[in-house]
Length: 593
Image (cartoon, rainbow, N blue to C red; front, side):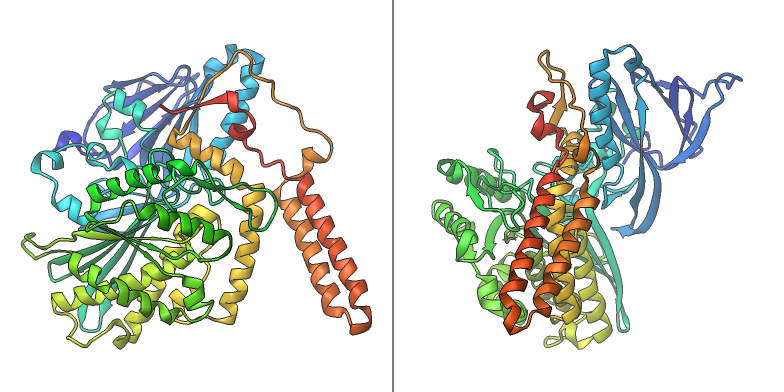
């Protein structure tokens, strides 16, 4: 990467009453970025202007500029205030963002109509949700949006471009927020960020082996669990994640990529306070066209595709699986294959070792399409020619157990190829490494799950320990309960914040915009913590009531249990003001075109 395109790795933020000045603090002597707090206009200046008594600035150290968002009247600058170095990717330092800050450029709001001020306040509250976004990573030196194989295949001309221009837009989390900086040709301030995770472990006995696991979340249909399901009309699916497992030893580097994503047709679950809302297939006549677009995109990016569907064959899930199978009949061929594996029927809730049955069915595809491998000179010795695409309903729990099994099998092949393992050697032969590898995948699954559902992954105890535990089952029960409440009381607002950050909805005024309603009474104080507390208390009373019931009083206690359940649902209904701006106010936004 040419020096003129190199990102500034140390920055100083000067916060004046009427402007922000971002000064490179890396000794490069490069120009400073001046941003007006009145209209968010940007320009490069040679140096920070002289400080006067009426313009005493606040000075902060920052790690980068994430981008700029424009709302109704003001604009908002997003910067990285705290980071943690977590490791390296192909020899380049990687940082995790631990704190973001939103800086308003909204002085022009003073002259705006009162109605517009109220709406600006309502929208700007979503930015506080954005500041809490988890799982953000970046590098000043290497493009994290591309897998090792795609990075290796970049031409010399592409490698000389600024990082943001090399980036895969699907995995560039701040793609939309960078647009204003791109328009102002501020390449050295444009920090590409991915969402997902990057985890590391090292060593196998006397051989030093580095294992890296990277998750890249797609931004095309990003969101929360119940509010983003299925595919959009363009074939982009919810919770699409590319997972890359990298092995490095003695100059050799090998990687294996697999992907997950929601079933690629339009379906949804409308949040309605039930524990498991009904699955609804939307525009079923469009399902084949949408799936074709999805798999065509996968073919272009990954080569051959094996779609592994882990969904149940019965109940509501069965309807979706049946539709998926029906659609795939029109798509499958030499390069696209479909395999259904009824995870719950075959493995139940404890016998996950039966995934060996699945591996036997996909082993041929994995060996045929292989993995990426380069030697110490950087010469390509082997390339990955295809990808396994795994899905369940959420593409979290069953999917993570399955992907960890596939990753383990492929890692053993890679280590044998490099010469670390003998012909019959397995990861299980090295107890310390085996334990750390399980934890690596368990943490990976938890991070992806938290970003989509708000809780760690279910069934994570099997990935972490190799078997189900009582504590793990209890933890799954609690996580399921928390997911239920997040779906109903918190994720709507979070979804609005995500849509705002990703540019899926652009704020726009409308002449017939309704004023913001004023909340009063119970609705004014009702919120998620209150709902959670009341429902948990009700749940506890119901459980205790049934436990204490003897045979003579069973019906009486059952009545009181149902009564408490009714109170639980009633209170939940009262406090279910999910706070969705975009959902409740369709005139306040327009789709990004």
